[in-house]
Image (cartoon, rainbow, N blue to C red; front, side, top):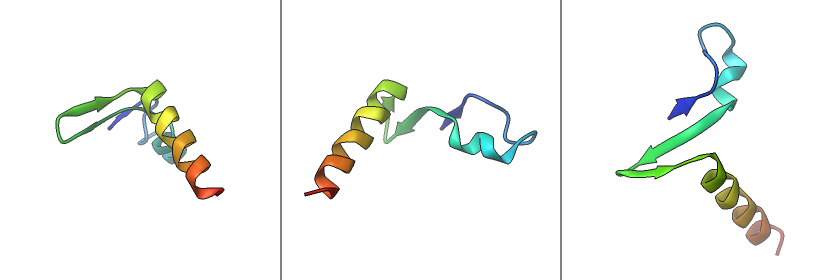
Length: 45
């Protein structure tokens, strides 16, 4: 997980996720936002 800010200086920075690498696949901010939107859509059904 790559963050936009330093979590040592501000613990809230752990919420500023820029990129996630999971099992060799890189998910940038745009991809993460798309996954979140899809999950919210499925949860609202």
